[in-house]
Length: 274
Image (cartoon, rainbow, N blue to C red; front, side, top):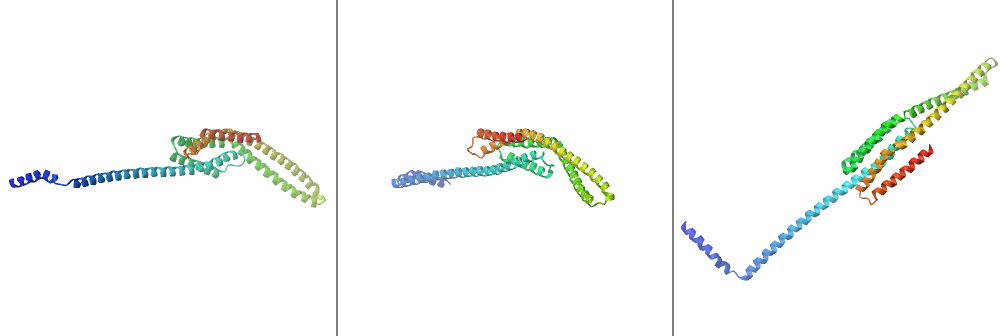
């Protein structure tokens, strides 16, 4: 054991001598190699860091691009559904309510609003919720407001059908009058006269029903045009926010003003036509 310790001590004492005997050229080569190795290490680490930054930047760009594409798709869907829903509300004054069509357009609006809430920014999502709720409330108000128009339309259709039926029956009796013999002629003539009087009265009732329905229609459309201003203002603000998120170059405030001006011009023309 003591011999091993002496040998180890001797070896350690010889190290300085061995190192001092190494030529300077060898030390220079070793030093250069170490410096080169350290430089390669630094270069590789910098390259890895740059690659990581590049990959992160590319991933962010890809996410931004995908998000922009989704927003663009939803924005186009909103542009398609809003005119449909506005036309539907205004048409309640012209025809019997189409439950299926109204359900489809309201479902489409709800679907678009839900998508916007998922992919839009905070303000955009709030506007989407507000728009959906406002149009749902307007739908309830419109159904109630249009009941008189719907009832008047049904009455007009009944009066028109009755007048047409009487007209057809009167024409048949007039032909019978032409071929009636002397015994039945006066009787048939009196009946035709009563039919003609009833037909004239039915025509008057039909015209009265039509006039009433047209007046109610005017009132409803004027109401609907004014009532639509609130949801349309929300829709305009939402459209402007979506365009901002799509990073378009259009000035948001200027766009809102243009859209509101266009809306007001259309509304005024509709009211003037009434």
